[in-house]
Image (cartoon, rainbow over all chains, first blue to last red; front, side, top):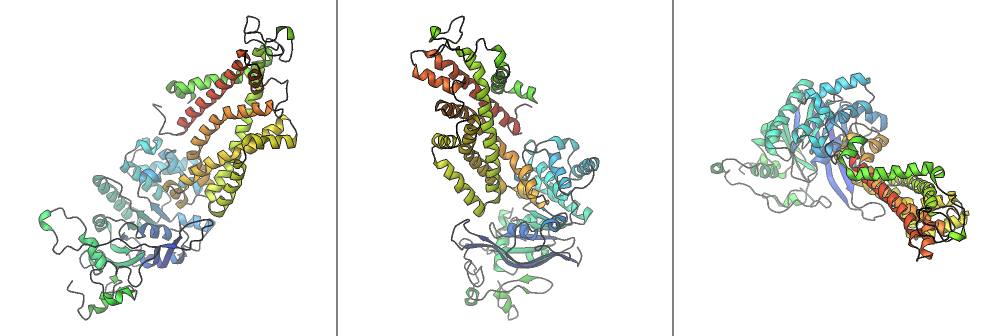
Length: 333
Length: 275
C-alpha cells in the first residue's frame, strides 16, 4: 500500500427513480447519498454495512455501471463518470468487478472457455492463438485446469465457478477490482481458499481492491482500511485497528457487537443490540440518519447532519459525539 | 449432434421422422400422386377407401390420397413462411422493447396490444380482402396478426434476463449493447420462442386453411388440407373426406412440436441428457 490515491470518490450520489414509464411518482431511493473517500494504490479497502445500505450500489457506481446522480469519481487522473462510449470501454480494462453469486454471473449457456475468451474478443486483443494461450494461463493462475475450459458452469462447484469469475475479472489485467460480496455465497472452507487466491493475486499483480461484504470477520481478515456504511452514507472510515479496536461511531460498535463469538463463555460485556429496522432509503430521517436507532442520540442528532471529521491519523467519523470528544463526553461508552 | 440427440430423445426422433417425411413427400408429391388432383369424376363421387382410391374420393370424385399428398406443399409453405416471418419480426420487435425499456417499451407494447385486441381471423380476413385474395396477401395477413405473440414472449424473456449478473458482467467488460443482446441475452430467450413457434405451426396451417375455406387463401380447386377438411364437414356421412387431410395436419403439427421440444433441450446445456 502506497500513499498514492488511485480512486478518489467525492460526494457520490446514486438515486433511483421509483416507478417507471408514465408513472407520476417522484419518489427516489437514495441508495448512495453523498459519499466521499479515497482508495490508495495497492490497498484493500473493506466496506461493511447491513443489507440494503447501498454498498453494492456504491461499488457499481464507482465503476460507472450506473449513471451516477451526482458527485465525481476519479481513477488515477481520469474522471470516470464523464466517460462514455469508446473512452469508457478503454477504462473498463483497468477496473473490474467480481460478483457475489458465481452461478448468476456466469452465462449458463456458455462454456468456461467461451466465457474467458469474451474479454479478449470485446477488446480485440491478440490473435486466436494468443487468446487461447492467455485463457490457458488465466485458468492456471486461478487454480483450475485446462480441461475445465470445455465445462459448463453448472458442471462445476461454487468455488470453481468463483475462480472462473475471478479469472474473467483478471483477464484484462486491471489495476482496481471491486469484490462485491465475492465470498459470501461460498462455504466457509471455500471462502478461505478464495480469499487466499485474491490475496496472492493482489501481491503478484499489485491489485487494489474495494472489498464489499456484510461479513465483518472476512473484512477483518483482508482489509487494510475499513469503511462502515449506513443508509447510503459512510459513517466511519479508518485503518483496520481504528475500526476493530477503537470504533467510535455507535453504529460501528453495534455492528461489531453483533459479530458472533465462537466461545459462549466469552460473551462481550454489555453487548449492544440495535432495536428497530433500517429506515426507508426513500425518506431517510433528517439530521443524523442513525439517530432513530442510536442508543446515544442527543437532541442535536435529529436536526443537524454530522460531517465526517478526522479523529486523528485518518480515522474519520460522522457523529456529533465526536464534537464532545475533547470535553470527554463520549469516551466512556 | 443430431445423432446423439436422436439416440437420447425418442420424442425428438419421432417428430424428426414425421416432419422430414412430410418434407420429402412435399418435394416429390407431383410424381408420386396416383391421380390428377383436379380430375373430377362424378361417377365415382363419395367412394370409401378402396384398392383404387386408398383414401376414397370426395364430393366431386377427386382422389383424396393425391390431394393430401400434393396439398402438403402448400400447407408446409404457408406454415413455415408465416411462422418464420412472424417470429423473426416478433423477436426483433420484442427484443428492442424489452432491452430499451421505459417509454419505448410502453409505446411498442401498446401498439402490439392493438393488434392482439382484434379477433385474429377477422383481422386476417379484413387484410386479405382489402389487398385482394392471393397466396401472398393471405400470408401477409397471417404474419400481421401473428407477430405480437412472439414480441410479447421475447420481451418478457429479455426483461427477465437483462438484469442478470452475467449481463452486468459482460457490460462491465465493455461489451456493446449489440454484443450483450446477441451473445448473452438472446440464447436464453430462444428456447421459449422455439417452443411457441413449433406449437404455432399447426395453428398457422389451420388458420391458412380457414382463410382458404373463406376464399381468401389459395383459391379452390387448389388441393389444400384445410379446405378439404371443410369439404368433409359439409358431407359428414362420408368420414374419409375429413379424416385423411385431418390426420395429415395432425402429423405435421405434432412432428413440428416434437422437434421444437427436442431443440429446446439441445439449446440448454442444463437439459442435455447424457450427451
